[in-house]
Image (cartoon, rainbow, N blue to C red; front, side, top):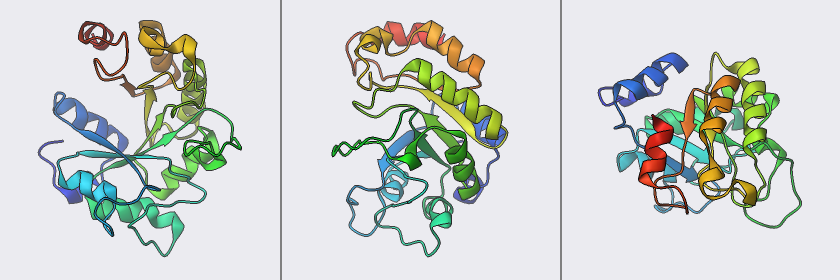
Length: 221
């Protein structure tokens, strides 16, 4: 990952991307950006800003693949939104999908159909040029680890050869029985891997109760 030029980073196959992460031995930095948020640099996307500050991989949160919006980016064809962003950033791009239904809530995190972790959306994102999907949950959306595993299995069967599949949560996502150490356990990791996940996402140590450096070390091992 550390040796590749921007023009190479945007053309990696799934297997090349996963190898690049492994070969960098933990020195790859991913940055999550929210396209519907106001750009910090006015007419430059937050993804470009993150790449300029050293991000090796961009993850889009709150990205509706049926109605794509990235403020600061003008794409004449909505289907080309991700490809254009990749060209501007010079980085591979992944997209968050959530295994829960659409909601009528007025919260900024409220679910929409185009953000649901399902076969149709994953195929749509692959067609748009995404390199990976991250099956996870935003705050309060009620995403369970069981739901994540089911979505991983469905998406793996549909486009596992073209999209890298990340799985996990960095907080409980409103499921209080999966708070603290139960955000993710060894059993959850086994479940995600069996379902077809290529990468496991863990909460950063000390960012939520119960997730200590030693606990995370144990899960990684």
